[in-house]
Amino acid sequence: MRRTSIKEDINESWLIAPEGENYVITAELRSTTGMNMTFATEDDLIIGCQVLGCPNDIPPGPPEQMQDAIDSHPKKIHGEVIREDGDLVYKIRVGSEDQSQNTQNKNQLNHVFKEAGFRLTVEAHGWMNMTQFIKLINHIKMRAVGALRILLDFSAVEDMPPTAPALIRDLIKHFARNHRITAVVGCEKHCTKMASQLPSSRYIHMFQSSDEAERFFQQDPIRILIVEDDPATQAFIAAFLEERGLKPTCVGSAEEGIESSQAERPDLILMDIHLPGMSGLDAILQIRKDINLCKIAIIILTGGASEGAVLAGRKAGINGYFLKPFHPKKFAETIFKALEDVFEEEDLP
Image (cartoon, rainbow, N blue to C red):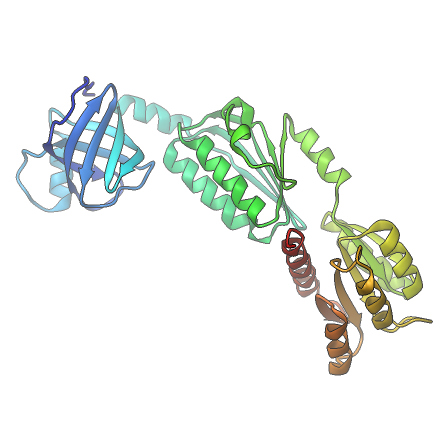
């Protein structure tokens, strides 16, 4: 390892070889401070990637040949790109190959992703470098596309890279902008200042333990009102929703549906059109006239592919419709889309 001292305005030509890539770039060493070296390049470097580097005093050749020459250079450095300080100006934290190998051995991560209904739980474990942490953040974003509730548990992470708090903050703000209730566990262990940098939002909640987060979600479930006069269909839909972590309530008439909506303020109403007494469409029209209920998501259920019924439902203000018999995957997708739409509208004036 080459330990650097404080120097400024070096302007020395170097070669940088990102590990795992088949190319070498030319860079200008601008300064060294402690274990950090600042380089200007004409090429992009990925924040978090591992690199080899050496002074540019080896002959040009194929990338593999130059990488071997860099690796055997007496003034070789091994480091990690930790940040970009400007337009193609990068800071690299220098470490020894032994340290790097030890880090790789420690980075035995066991990230657990649990998807139950419309909720995603992420449990991160172990040590991680910047590259691994960026991959984890991107993986969380990808897996969270189908979730309305998210639990991020970082309490078992042993160590985080220096910029991890900023990445976590941006991830949580991303979920808040998309109206996802997000519970975060264990961040105070690594990100003591992060919570104060988050905006005040009803979508962001910080907890000391996963048990606290679980209790929070249990106390604030997504509530679904089922208005259906057939007991067997009621039971089927209720079981379907409970399996997905949702809280169903069942009533058998439109009148009861209106009363329950007023009393419980559910997040979504599944309304059968053909009901004894008042029809489901008339109940929807009455619900939509109530200023306290007008933003509740409503899906109509019908046993016939009646375009007239669907059109009438749309005029009444439904968020979707579903034709019986039920196809589980499509039914879940319809419910998710309706809830997603109404949650996004909640903060609108």
